[in-house]
Image (cartoon, rainbow, N blue to C red; front, top):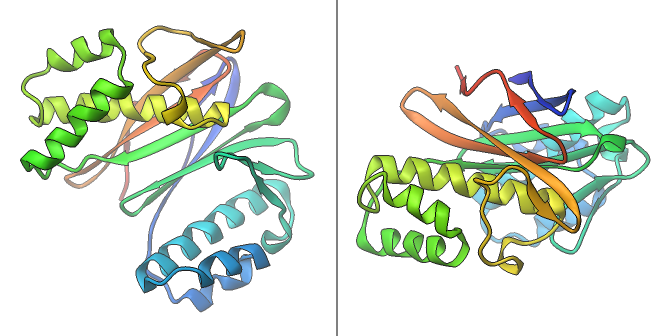
Length: 236
């Protein structure tokens, strides 16, 4: 599924939401390059092998459709924190995967950088999980974000989880646009718009993706005001 009703500034942002299918790896391995195949050989889990292979193949297939190049000939270079760059093409792109759904965003490279994060809204509870999420809040959420989150209800309730993942995907998308890791930035807030980093202004946006009763939060970040005509993407 592809959407194009989001803009950064006045420039359309191309979004692809692709649902995972457990296919025979032989059906997509021809799309991969030698580096991808080497990475797959290092995986001990058959499930991890199939999922990573599929994700890499869908990324290459989508970028190839956009650039007109052969999927296995695309040269994808990754920075210190994993931010990808496509050599020989003026495209900024970013990808994220969570529980059966791949999100890919593409943007003109001369217009700035872009980041995306998608997170499945896992409602399964348990004191240990809620405690871990609470530790994340204290470590990475600004005071205003902590206040907003606290106003939704007790930690772990449905409204609290919704707001947690909405804020978290915005943060992850932002540091991915920067090419950084979230652990290197400590407390910062995405409620202020724009966010200033290294003398530049950055904006974030979010949306919900649904498939039946399943929900994901989608966060996007870029170097211009983000307009989203659709706040709920429904997969069929």
